[in-house]
Length: 99
Image (cartoon, rainbow, N blue to C red; front, side):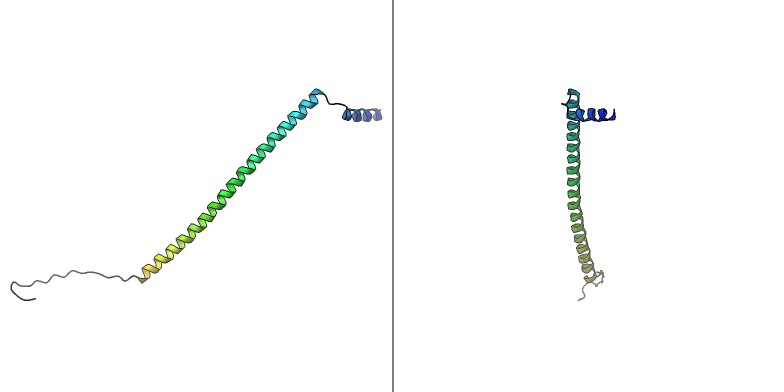
């Protein structure tokens, strides 16, 4: 009896598919295509985001270097600057005298 059931399963494999089997296969193919498209979209979006973030990181590194250069320039400028103070003096000269 086990030989008959094995033989029956073997015949089932090689028998022409029924309509419901074809529908199930088509549905499975459609579902796998949808999953593939969703995964491709997800991968592409992650790739775009990673690329944008890498560009932003490079820009931030460049801006940080510029800020360091500016800071050094300002420090050098302030250390070399000479401070002078102006004072106003008032001298009273009497009328008719020569200064």
